[in-house]
Image (cartoon, rainbow over all chains, first blue to last red; front, side, top):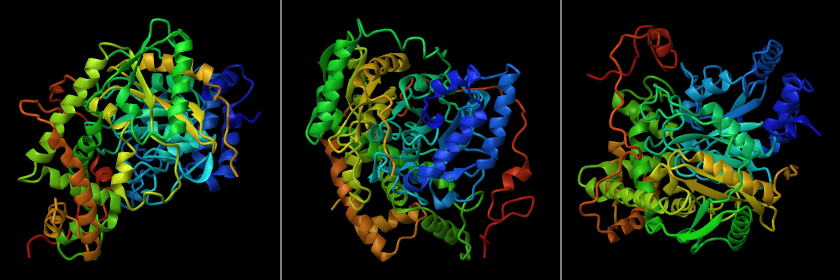
Length: 486
Length: 95
C-alpha cells in the first residue's frame, strides 16, 4: 500500500498512531505527482520546496501535541484562491504572474487546521467552462481515460484527487463547477449552501452564485474538509453567521425516516441510458438503507439554463471590469492612450469564452435590454427558488444525475458554446436557489468512466447530504476503485 | 436575428473589447444562437413576480466604521504593470 492512495482520514489515523510522518506522506504524494502528472496535467503550480518545509513543521507540531484536525495532510486548491506564497492565475493570461497581496480565508483556515498546501490546480479561465479546456495554460485529462475531459471548471481539483496527486482539494461552484468534475472523475464533491463558506479571496465569477467547497476521495473526508472551511467570515459580507456542526457525527446514522425526492424533470430527454441506470441503482441502494423515495417535480427546470446564462454572464461582466491593466495583471504596452490600453489589454488578456460571456452579460445589462433579459431572468430565478422551497416541504433531500453523460473527448463541442451550456442543466438550479448540492460516485459506464449521483437539500442541510452520501458509498462498492494511469 | 453585427460591435465597445472582423462574425453567430435559446423565458408570464438577486434573507451587512490597518501602499502597488512608488502610472488621458 502506497501512502498516496490513502484517504485523508486513513492518513490521519496513521499520523496519529505515529506509523507515518507527514514528511513520508508528502514525499509519497510528490513521487505520485512525478509519475502521473505528465498524463493528468492537473497542476498549474507545485510548491515543491515549500511543501517539504511545511511537512517538517507539521511533524514538529504533532510531536509537541499541537496537531490541528488536518495536521500534516497535503492538499491542493483550484487556482482561483488567492495565495501569498505562489501565483494565482485563475487559468488566465490576464493573471499569469499575479501573486496576491492577501490570502483567501479558506486558505488560511486550511493552514490553521495544519494541512500542507501542495499547489494550485488547473481550471477553466475565470471558472467559465464545463471541461477546463478554456484554461490558458494546460488542459487536465480525466485520470480514468486519457484524452477525455476532467470536467470543469474545477477540473484540475477533481483530476488531482482522482489520480491520488493530493489527499483532497478545494474547488468553487457557480453552476456545477465542483459537482460536475467530481462526477466525471469519480470523486466526492460538495457545493455548500450559499454563504456557508467564505468567498473572501476567491476570484469572483458570479457573486450571487459562487460558493467554495471540497473535492475528496470519500464522504468522510468531505465531512472533515467541511469542518475545516465552513463558518462566518466578517471579510465576506454574504457569509452567514450560523453555527457549524461537526459534519462527521451524522454519517453513520441510517436512512430510516429520511424522505428522498426524485425530481421527474431530471430524468428527461438527453439523459445517457448508462447514467440513468447507475443513478437508479443508487436510488435502490438508498431505499435498502431505509430511505423512502417519492416522486417530486421542479416545473421550471427547463428554464434554468436560460436564467443562468443571463445572470452569470451579467454578474461576470461587472466583476471582470476590474481587469483593465492598471492595478494588477497583464497590460498591453503598445497603446498610446488610456482607452486604447484598456481595449488592447482586455482583448489580448482574455480568452474567447470569457469574452463571449462578457459580451452576453454586457448586452443583457445594457440600456433597452435590461428588462427583457436580466430582469426577466431574475424573476424566473424566483420561480426556480420557489420550486425548491415547495419540494423541500415534502422531502428531506433530492437525488438525481449530476451530468447527463459520462466524460467526453477533449475537443468535442469546442465550437458549440450552447451545446456545452446545455450539458450543465442538472447542476445550475442548485446555485440559482442557493441550496447545497453534492456529487457522490455511484457507478461506472461500460467504458470504465465514473458516474456520480447528485444530492440536493434545503439551505444549511449539508448534514443530511453527507449522511445519505455515506450510506450510498457503503453500498455502491466504488470506494477504493482507482484509475490505471498510463 | 436577435443581435446584429453592429450591435455586437457596440456591446464590445461598451465592454472595452476590440474584436476583429472574424471575431465579430463568429461572436454574432454564437450570440444569436444563445439569445435565441434564452428567449424561451418569454413563454413564462412573470407579471408581478419579484426578482431574486440574493438567495438568503439578508439585507445589509453593516459594521462599525473603525480605522483598521489596510494594505500598505508598497504591497498595493507591487502587482501594477507600471508604478512610480506612489501611484499607478497609465498612458496620458488628456492630450
